[in-house]
Image (cartoon, rainbow, N blue to C red; front, side, top):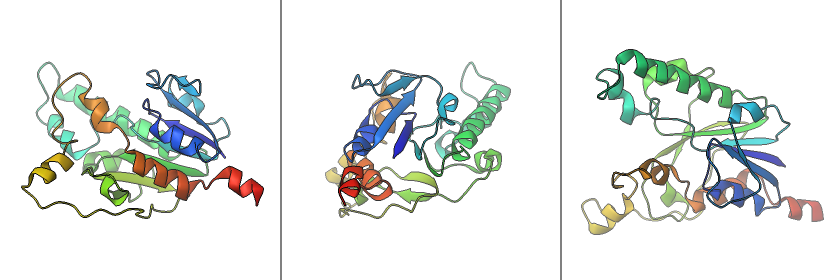
Length: 214
């Protein structure tokens, strides 16, 4: 399969699909962290009509779309106006819509839980599947919504037992939410867990080399 992984610089999802023998490229405005020559620096929307079989958009701009940022629409942060915040929301919803409705038969667009203002602005909004890293052997909490078109919901592969609330282990599992402030906080919070990426590659695009052999 020809697969495009959008809005990812870590290479985690790209490498997971590539390990199954697929032709995979990633694209983002920033360079790839792993220095891969299969990473395109540019606007994802410029590459949606290049004949892909599967599109996985892992971290589209979501600050204005997710529940955690809805407060800024009513009380903007210092130096910003309400008009600017709502304009940012419109731009983010437009980008999300372009990805969700791309001319590609199989599409996954990842996003945190979306607020009502965002849902109303997304063209062809569909109900997402919500997954957790601990479904796939990763000791972490991070509710992630997957908007799927032409793809089946992910099935848990290595479901762990979450620790009790208030324990030290529970705090450790909450590392995403407790990430320290800093210039790379957004990058660390958005990174896809390897277990989730492997499940995507295994369930949505079975090993191409194995299929060819059969």
